[in-house]
Length: 158
Image 1 (cartoon, helix red, strand yellow):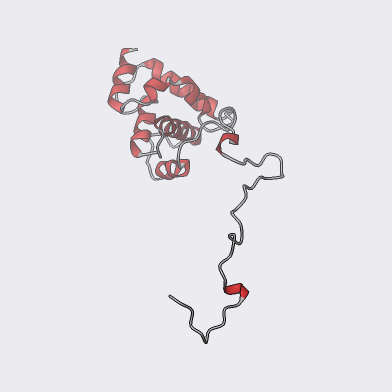
Image 2 (cartoon, helix red, strand yellow; image 1 turned 135 degrees about the horizontal axis):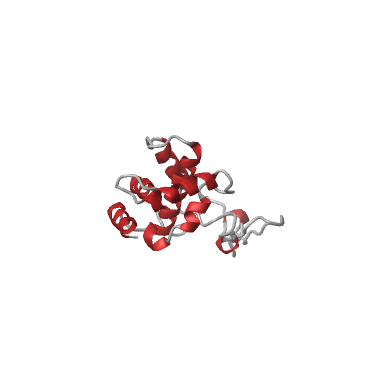
């Protein structure tokens, strides 16, 4: 469309030769210890390997009636629940709590070794840096990701 003769075009209205402002530049922190990308986020050690939304798992756990109301037992269940969810790469669900309870010997006739292990985990939870770290370290990951009935069967056979 042609320009109307009564409209004056100023230099500010003419097409620009380049975009203003220019494209965004990559930001980098000048402070030490601030991660600039996903590869710089610490994993393992004290920080552990968290799964998506561990706060949801703690909320589910707070709404669950546990067979033992000991604070350290709750820490063991929390650690096992969050570890299973992280191993499966998803947010925690109620089945993760059921698995944690099964690993502690609830929901089936557990052998004496399982009950002794639970007692050891609860005692160690008072000294763990992260809640339930001893229990998480002592449970085989292949067993942790199974269904509650499969875990109960495996623990009875061991």
